Length: 536
Ligand SMILES: NC(=O)C1=CN([C@@H]2O[C@H](COP(=O)(O)OP(=O)(O)OC[C@H]3O[C@@H](n4cnc5c(N)ncnc54)[C@H](OP(=O)(O)O)[C@@H]3O)[C@@H](O)[C@H]2O)[C@@H](O)CC1
Ligand SMILES: Nc1ncnc2c1ncn2[C@@H]1O[C@H](COP(=O)(O)OP(=O)(O)O)[C@@H](O)[C@H]1O
Ligand SMILES: [K+]
Image 1 (spheres, rainbow, N blue to C red):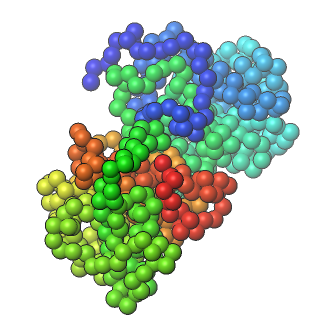
Image 2 (image 1 turned 135 degrees about the vertical axis):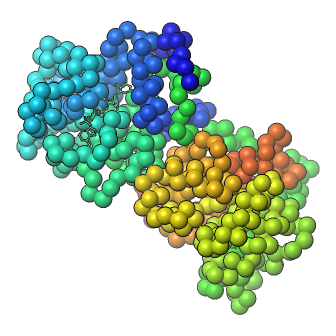
């Protein structure tokens, strides 16, 4: 790709304000692109070229200083920890602004020059910003002494950003640990230092700043939103520094952020002339041995999401065929005829070993098929099933897979740790291998279809880490999927588009319901996460 002419870039005057990501997602349509480090470097260079020298870093530093004063208006003593890359440069600029605004600023320079006495080697912009800070009279201190943060009211973390190439160590890791141990609130610049921006994957005991707030600059890193990223990032803010990221010449993002926008309009109000047959049939195949509850949760969720009729096909012959809490649920064996071709089938919730025998028939006949839990484990064990899955996709019959990281690892033939080390790569790989839409669950759930940009879901928190919440999700997605298929099919969309839409919407609503029920992240039981028809 040839680089676009710099003057073509839409760089606006810097009169904008940073926005809290949660507010942005609630009101703006998006989709918001997420850029990896390589793309962000390209963006940085393009934007810097379109502006007068040093302007981009000045904007970044001013944005950090303004947000610091807005979030911690009473903080007088502010310590800025600066590393030796451009992240440090943003810190120098912020320190200068805060100093000029009358705050008591201490600027700690951490890294090569303080640790081993070598001459500092900042990139040109950061070197210029450091000179400005010195000339402006900001007190600059080499390193961070153990008691240095006593009495501090705010720390600005500008140690490491997108340039992280290895786990933080040495003087940088020591500074991170001191900062975390101080109890002083931290505003992280671009990323909490130590967090890998592309993946959000932290090794055990890796040094990483635990920020109260993170201000992402120009572009948003996927690692802030998935794997381990949400905890160290704290509340995420974003400032595009006046650069419009939607410009066609900008580098392709690594993923898109899924919020509510664009989804509500998919399920319009019901028309008077509609009947339950208009909203699709869902069949749940699962509940082997003592795991009938999983199938019931999925069935209830499909009903609550608005499916027209829901049948549960229990694999345990001795289990009662009635749900007293939801007597609307019907219990019947899955038919082996054309009714299967027009149904949305969920297989695997509490499926045990028994579900494997059902898969060849379902893969061959089900119109829409969602495989979860034990159905995924059976798929991982049997290459013939995987082949049948690919054939379905090639014939235009869509499948959705909803693995958690261990199930994804079994399907990919690797460990769960390897999946978690690069969740975006894992979800793309699994979608490509299976031809299905894949929902890789966990903090920052990913949704991917073959060959397309993955989505990272922004809703939900650890209240969802409760048994059965995955069964609810599977049923919820199926209930939505059944409504945008059949006679309510959205025109112009392919079968795989509809599968992806249902997955994106289901994952978003599932997470948002948990946030509403447990705003403080307190424990939830999965039955409460079952939708009640009000979730839109
Ligand atoms: N891109 C954008 O959109 C914009 C970017 N901007 C800002 O620039 C930041 C990116 O700057 P950057 O590329 O200079 O990287 P940065 O994070 O400062 O690291 C620098 C140095 O750290 C080193 N290093 C690496 N790992 C290490 C470790 N574990 N422990 C210790 N050291 C380690 C490594 O040097 P090494 O030691 O490997 O030679 C590297 O040179 C970005 O986050 C944002 O704040 C904004 O100003 C404007 C918009
Ligand atoms: N820490 C977390 N943050 C956000 N979502 C989570 C977290 N832990 C679990 N979840 C979500 O909860 C659900 C759990 O699904 P799963 O692991 O299949 O559980 P189960 O098999 O018990 O139903 C998934 O949607 C997953 O994304
Ligand atoms: K940082």
